[in-house]
Length: 92
Image (cartoon, rainbow, N blue to C red; front, top):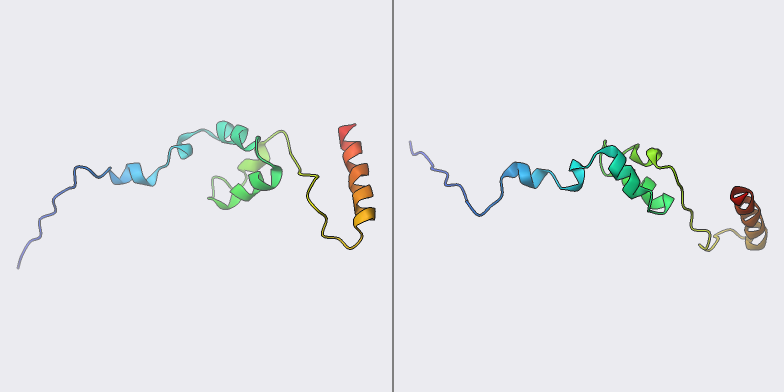
């Protein structure tokens, strides 16, 4: 029976350093603050990254919607009017 000798690669980082990225070390309040700078749809999309990120977007206090995106509705004029009415109600 032969025994294999494992020689560690000294230039390679430890496995624990590879498993954890830098952003995962931030507390939730810092991550939610970073998410607050994104459009809402992108902040919500981060929920698929991991279990930790699943509801992190719900902690942000400001939402940004891109109101310049083209409508895919067949009633563009009517939808645009409703959208503008809704946005004017939000702006107060």
